[in-house]
Structure formats: C-alpha cells, structure tokens
Length: 84
Length: 450
Ligand SMILES: Cc1ncc(COP(=O)(O)O)c(C=O)c1O
Image 1 (tube, protein in one colour):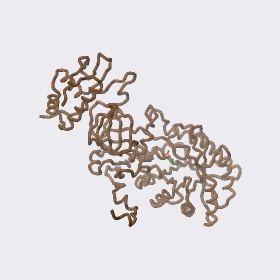
Image 2 (cartoon, chains in turn green, red):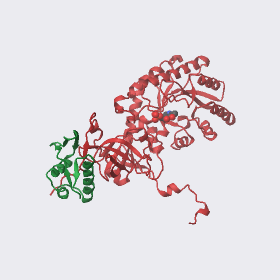
Image 3 (cartoon, rainbow over the protein chains, first blue to last red):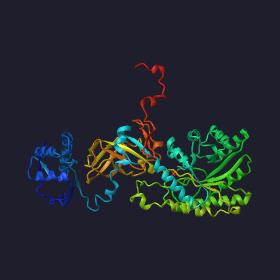
Image 4 (spheres, rainbow over the protein chains, first blue to last red):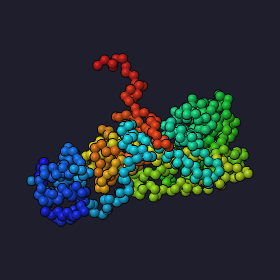
C-alpha cells in the first residue's frame, strides 16, 4: 500500500472531530477512522496499521484492504494527506 | 483472543449551514425481526429479495379504520381496492374482515369472483369495461360504476339484450379545491354532466340507480377536500330524492387517504403533517348528515381505501450487493432489489432499516438497485449506518401498489411470504423462474435452428 503523510494542520479531537486549521474545514470520523489517523500522526506505516487492525478486529484481509484504500482516497480527496 | 467488532473507517465532511446528522438516528434503528420472525432467517429460507406481509398488521389496520368510521356513522362498508394489492392471500384477509371488493378491470373482477366474492359485493369501477365483463357483472348483480356516456349507452344496450336489470351508480368528478383536478374519470359535477347522466338513468327502467361514487385522488393530504366532495354528492342525492323520490343505497367516497410513507418532496416525515384518519372520518361523516331522506334513513357509506390499509403491512427484505464510492466522493450502495420491485420509490422516501446491529456512525448514501439501467435508483440521499456486502436491510411500508405494479424486467420477481398471526410463515406467491416467464412465448420454427 502507498504511504501517506498527514497534514500538520489537521487537529484530531478525542471524540473524532477533525479541524483543518489551514482551511477552516471540519470533519467527523468514526472510532476506527480516528484510530487510523492517530497512528498516521505518529508516522506509523500504513502497512503496519493494516496488520494491527487485522489482529485486533474481526475483519477479513480483503474487506480491510478495500475499506482502507477507500478511506485513504477520501483523505486524499479532502486534501488531509499527501502521498509520499 | 476475542477480536473487536469491525466497522469500516469513515470520514464525513461537515457542511456548514445544516447539521449532517439531523433526524437521522431514529430513522435507522435496526429491524432484526418482522412480527417476531428473524429477518436473516427469512432471507436464508426464502432468499433475498423477499416481500414480507404481516397478516396481523392488515387486520389491525382494517379493524382500526372500521372502528373509526363506525363510531361516527351507523352504516359503513369497506371494499378492498384490488389494484393496491391483489395477491389472493392479501385480498382474503380483507374479505375475512368483512370488506367487499373494488375492482377496475375484468381481470380483477374475475379474481374477486374466483376468491368467492359474490357479484353483489363487487364494485366495478374504471373507464374500460368490455361487453363480456359487463355481461358478467349484470348477470352477477354486481354494482357497476359508470364512467362515461358511451359506457352508459353500452350498458343500456346490454340490459336490453340480456333482458336483465343492472345495478348502477355513476362516478362523479368534482372540484374539491385541490390541484390537479381529477376530471378524467366519471361525470363532472360543476358543469351539470353528472345530473344529466342521473336523469338519463332514471328514465331507463332496466337500470337500478343505487349509488353515487367519487374518488378524488390518491395520497390526499387534506380532509377538507373530502368534506367538499361528499357535500356535492349529498347535494346530488338530495336533488334526486326531490325530483323522483330515489333513495340511494350507498354513497361511495373512494379511496385516497395517505399512508405513513413520506413523499419525495416532503421535508417533514408524514406522521407529522398528515391529518389523522379520525379527521378524515369527521369531515366525511359531517357532510353525509346533510342528507335529507325521509325518516332519517341513511345510505351506506362505502370506502375503497387502498394504500392507507396495506402500506404498513408490507416490507421488502433486500441484500447489500456492494458498496461503492461515486466520483464526487459520495457513498453508494447496491441492493438486490431495485425499481423493478419497488415502483413506489418514484414517489416515496421509503425508510430503510438495517437488519443487523450496526455502529452508531452514519453516512449519506445513494441507493441503487441491481438493474443495469440508470433509472434504477431507490434513494438519492439517505442517511444510513455503515453497511457492507451481504448485510440485509428492510425497506419499510411497501405493501401498496408494489406487488401489483412490479415489473418483470431484467430479473425475476421474488417470493412473497405472509407472516401469519401465530408467527408461522406461509409462502403466498412463489418467486418466478425462467420456465414460468417463457411459458407463454412461442419461437417460430424457422428461428429455432442457430
Ligand atoms: C376508483 C378507485 N378507488 C380506490 C382507489 C384506492 O386508492 P388509495 O390507494 O389512494 O386509497 C383507487 C386508486 O387509485 C381508485 O382508482
């Protein structure tokens, strides 16, 4: 999977509220979305994040791959991340 | 190790100006059972998509409606509007509850007779009545509602030929202050056409004039419209009585009460803006009491209520075939039931309930059916919890018009089951197969060899 760098302007609150200080836009994420973003903030590899989720959650590799790609595409569309 | 429940990661952009989650939570409560029967068990046994009809709900709704009218007016007769849902099992529940039959074609007429309904208990409506169907109706003593002058002369001719009397009423169209006016059916009140037709009938000794009929429209959101309409019918009835002493057996006010489904253009949910059935009943019966018959005699009030009596009793179980992302980033879901089965999705914002426990997070989604056709969209924008492939949903309040207007198009029509009052499940219409569909086709000899 491609790696992404999360924007330094993105603030993530404990309850899944996101604020992009450069544009003033706000977003919400669900629990697992928040978990992924926080890992990305800590510069964890997407591959590592994927493995961790597979270990912790009841989900198949295929479904996770599809969902994770979709999530990252959304982050990219909203310009919250940069591909590296 | 026990793994955590998985929900797909989601991010939603907050729109300024309105709240994303407004009103969403209550709409999407999971519905894992219908009348105490597990939804996924139903889908496993009868496959998906699957129409499910609740016997209990039909009886409850019908009894409640009858009670509301009977407590306001002494003589009330419901007639089940066949076109709304003419599956035998559905009609039979209504007939067991005492409803007669309201039909609008020879096909529907024959269905009612086959179920054991006698001619006198059938109201025969509609603009198209063939000689054959009218002959049956006259012989059976059915109540024929005349739609236009050509039909009136057709019936006069047939009664002469058969040397038999026909029981007739006329359908009257009238201005009840709503737009669009339904003036294509029946004889117009305001321009005197209805009175003229009644005059013609009263000088024909082979015609028994027994009633007056109106049907002012469907999903009528105003009880006042009924009040006006019934007042006009009552004025006609009073004139008839004054002129030649005719006392009518009944006044048939048609159907048209809305169901609890919310229309597409409607912002607030139906429950919040529609009059109650009690309000309709008050409007109708108060006008009926304007009748001036001798000895306070009263005609029977006939109701041909359709959608309001059956919508709630029908559900459509459907399976999520895939989840997609549209080019604008919006979530799309593909269901195995489309507009081919859910004709009413063109008018209604049907509520959709997940059939399994879901996370709390919701997404705005667009719902497509399985057809490879652009029109096959069930809902442009609905807030739903995150759903994944193979999840089941229940599309609510689909009992009216879908199981009659469904299309055999691209796919086959599925099973229909009825959950009986004792929670047993009966298959009431078997899903179609290729053989059934091809049964009526004939391939010319010359085309058989490839
Ligand atoms: C003559 C007649 N009666 C009754 C009905 C039932 O109407 P609804 O389902 O609106 O109650 C219809 C439907 O269009 C109708 O045409």
